Image 1 (cartoon, rainbow, N blue to C red):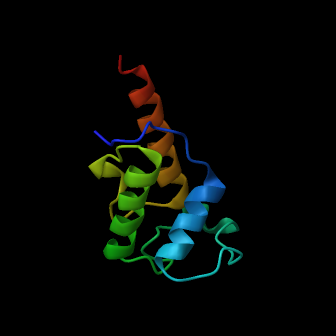
Image 2: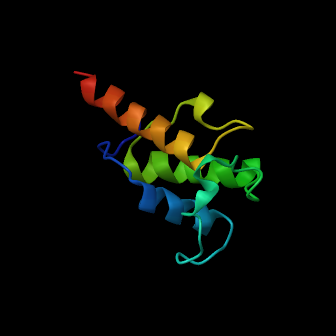
Image 3: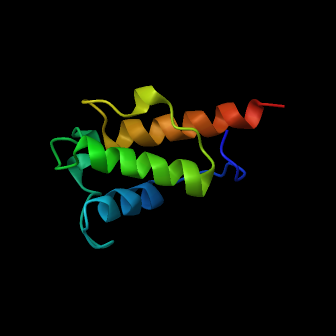
Length: 93
């Protein structure tokens, strides 16, 4: 279990983390019609995705399920997985 208290993560924050993982500026466009495009097709390799997951777990206290990162992961599906993880962790005593 992560040491920091879990807090939610929004689309803007997730977009920033993804952009930083591949060395792009915060104002680069990932907001358009790309939310349903697999992240691998957008240029994110598995190493970049693992880096993002590591940051989310360390900085936001969310335990990211293994199923969240796969070959078909999209910005939308990753965000949904994070929101579900946050809700599940909120239900733990």
